[in-house]
Every structure is written in structure tokens, then in C-alpha cells.
Image (cartoon, rainbow, N blue to C red; front, top):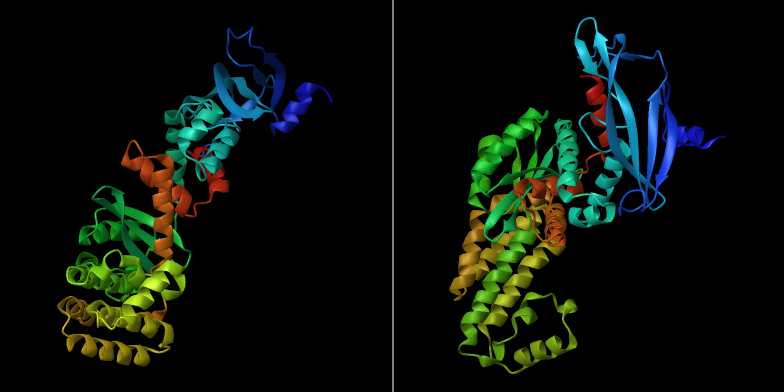
Length: 423
């Protein structure tokens, strides 16, 4: 087998396309540029090509040709370029049009295989790093990465989604985005700027445009934000809102730390003990355990210690309550205990529990949590740190969907090409 036949097979070319010649250009030949491999493709003389307009498919003769060049995957360590005179056909019904080639999409300077590889790498590495590795500009890479992700999202079908999660995460400073996730598939569905009922409104429009059925959603997990609550009541009236353990314990810890800060002004021993109280006992270091035991052994009768036991009581309900009734009885007893204490900050926390108790107890009915969203948010923040920021918000959203959207990355190029072939 000669080299042209070998590369014809390697590139997966089918009739009437074949490799005509191959050239390796050295540094001297390219005036200081790195060595590169160049492959020229041709089609058989007398070939007819299907009309690319509106699924016409009518075989038509070649009218003329236009020269194109595409960057392909490297062969070994060398940049590789495909060159071809792409035919233009004259269709009886649609006039003159450039035919579709099987290795690239129209108006692209890259082959489908090159773009597929860059997409796979972009899910793991910053685009700026990939640009340096590939020898291309990040602007060129972002252009087709966003194009593929946007196309894949157009094909997302959410008709079977029954459990949603929504939570805000920081975009930059005090700017927030709200992330909406499918709790069953554990993936990001949509992102909206802000963190209020307007976000839910915009998401609902997207949800319905992709086959979602609002009345079929049975559960929505969220935090205690009133904006989310209003949006859920308005758009997902049949769904139960669930506030899970993460947010409840977070509010308990915030109340506990406020108590510690206030008491530390009178009890110097409490200074620097923040994480002694906020961490679980089994995760404390030996030094923290000694400090914890010392504060309890001195008989100081700390208000912080009482608030700490209240926080533990919250955690115990989640660990021990197996049914809705057990959880309800546990929270009612806890709220009563805190409200009869003389700790204003903890009483404020108890009032929050009481006002959201139906949503808190819904966890024992449906067993959905926001833990999935917290995990996704961690990935999102890691993506942001890894890239050291994004030049615009669209790129940030694109990368979130690429890493957390469970888009069919392996089929993206096939999706795009099938769409092109269908006009």
C-alpha cells in the first residue's frame, strides 16, 4: 500500500474523495515556521455531488472549485493541514452552491476530528492552555467550542424531568448566577443571571421550550431565599419545595458563630475557637480537641456551649429521624427548646426554622437534596479558578455546560454534521 492510499484509509475518506499527494515541509521551506505535514485531497473526475440545500440531495455536476485549507489533528508531533479544491455544483432548482465535505463543517478552518479533540480537552483543561498546546489562538477555539455546545443544548430534551434543584453561585465578586439542575441525571440544565424570582421565570421559559412539563415536576430543592420560593409557587405549583440539611446546618452554624463572637468579648478563651465549634467533633485536630475539652471542663457555663448543643440537635434529627412524623416531632421539640432559651440569636434561627418547616420536612417525603448542586457548584468554582477568569460571561456559561451539562460530547460533531446535511 502506497502512502496516499494509507492516508486515504487513515482519514476515513470515501468515494469520490481520495488523497492525491502528501508533502512534509521543513523549517527551511516554511521560512522559520515549525515543520508541518500537508495532505492534498481530490475527488474523482466526473463526480456528481448531492445538493446541500433544504435536504434536496439532487446529484448535480461540478460547476467549479474553490480552494480550502483545514487544520487537522497532528500526525506524531507535526501540525497537519488538509488542502482541497472543494467543488461547487449547479443545481437545477437551487442554483450554484458549495458542497459539504465529510471531514469539516462549512466556513470552518478545522476538521471535525480536530474540533472534537479540542472539545474533549476543553472539558479538562483551560482553553488558554489548549491554545498554547495546539498552536492556535484561544479566540478561534472558543468560537467553535461555543458553537458546538449551543447546538447540543438545542437538542436537550427535559420532558422526563421530575425533580429540579436550584442554587446560586458567585460569578465574580457580588455578581451571582443561578444554576438549575436535574436531580436525577445530576447535571446542569440551565444558568440564569441573578438569584431571584426573575431567574425562575426565565428558566421556566427555557424549560418549556425544551419539552419540560411544569405540572409534572414533583419536587424542587432550594435554599431559603424568598425569591426562589415565590418563583416555585408561581411556576411549579404542583411541586414540593425542599430545603435540605446543608442549608439548615449552614444557618445553624452561622447563628452559633454569631453567639461565639458576641460572648468572646467577655470570655477571652473563646477567641480563635471558631472551627472548634463549627466542625464535627471527629474532624477536629488534637489541639482543637484539647481546647474544646478545656472550655467544657472549666465550668464556665458558656452560652456558646448551649448554642453548640442546639446545633448538634439539628444534626441529630437528620441522622436519626426515619419518617416524616419523627422529623416533625424532632423539629417542633427543638424549636420549643430554643424559643424558651435566653439566646436571642438562636431564637432568630428557630423562627427561621418555624417559618420554613413545611419545606424542611418535605425532605422526608421525597428524599431529594441539594447535595448534587453543591457538588456541581464546586466544579463550577474550580473551572473559574482554573481559567483565572473568563473574558465574557458567555464563555463562562459555555464551560459550565461543557463540564457539568452531561452533553453528548462524543456525538457533538455528528450532530453538527447531520444538521448541516439536512440544510
